[in-house]
Amino acid sequence: MKTRTKIAIAVVAVLVVGLWYWFRPDRLFSNVRVDEAMPAAGGAAAVAQPLESGTFYTILHPTSGTATIYKMADGTHMLRFTNFDTSNGPDVHVYMVAADDAKDAATVERAGFVDLGVIKGNVGDQDYILPGDLDVAKYRAVSIWCKRFSVNFGAAALKPAQVSGLE
Image (tube, rainbow, N blue to C red; front, side, top):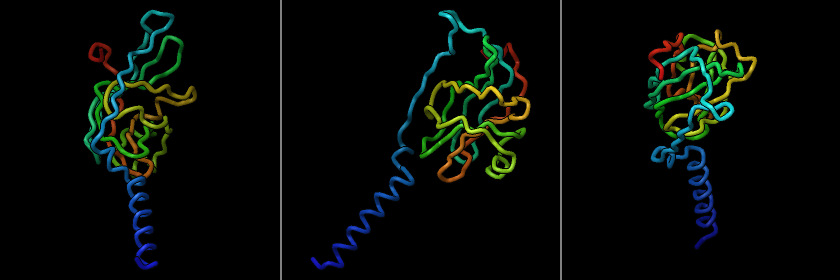
């Protein structure tokens, strides 16, 4: 085999591996299920007051479920996803967005956001503790955001919770 052919094969192999790592197409066909129970305080069920709630809707990838902000008995705030389902992908994060809705990427980027970290799973019930200084009156939307490609998978606009309809 000629030296040029060997170099070309090596370059193509490196490119294929690099592109696979960047796009992670395998994640489109795999789910990560998370089924966290509502946190308990002192062995008893936590007294949690629902403050805001919204239903996820699809923007770029099919997304569904409910996002609810709870005020916990100790005064902290928690974002909880229930019956959550979205596509898996590379570097997917949960953002609290400083807008009434996160209907597109431009809104998220323009309004500003707080990154709650990498999504725990793309299916199931999961909890995210909100920073103590987060103004829940300002951050009124949740975005499922792919940082690698700066795209919004789905979002939920948060509205005052109806206590009777949440549990």
